[in-house]
Length: 246
Ligand code: ZN
Image (tube, rainbow, N blue to C red; front, top):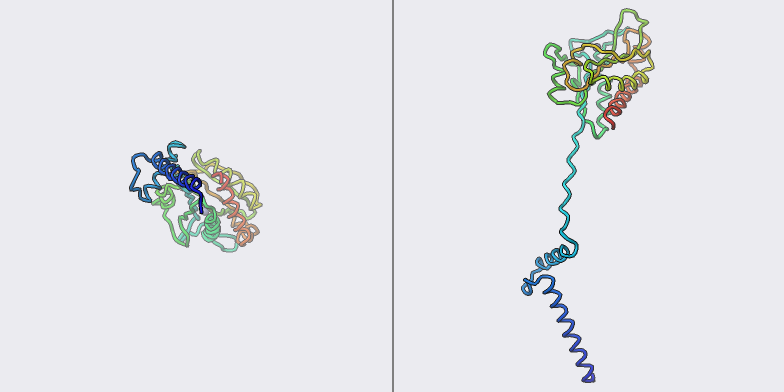
């Protein structure tokens, strides 16, 4: 049987514990000493936390979505306009489309770039209605890359040459040219200013690449290989990424 003294101590302890519990609740939320729902209790904890640690930090604003760079790839010629005719009878329009499709395909793997093509099949685009520059301007593209192959009466002429028109395009032309000239291994004919309408009428940095001379029989055979076209496409993409700082 429990001694009377011990019983009293136990009762006193119980009163103290219950009293402390009630006092704690009153302190945490003096206005709500009864009828506290579970939600209110959760709020109490939040209020208590704020009292101790100060106001909760407002949620950080979400990082603004970075717009991808829009890059327009322009395969020269097309449809009824075959462009240059190679030493073996190949057409410039087919070479430019083959390289351009490879460039666009590689650009699909670059997360910060959206690639667009002025044509992705053998169709004619009018220079009279300025279809190519209009496409890039309306898109508000960041870069415009026109891909061509060269022609000359003398079949021994060889080389890679790059053009720009507006001063703001020189940086782009220089960087892409360095990559492409290295990839072709042809004579480096440098970067020149030229009044081509696709360069003149585009508002963004724009460059036109003459990858090589299809009229040079040896160069043409090289240019028609899958390996060469892939290497040139990779060089163009490397140049684009370097220019954009990617
Ligand atoms: Zn051309």
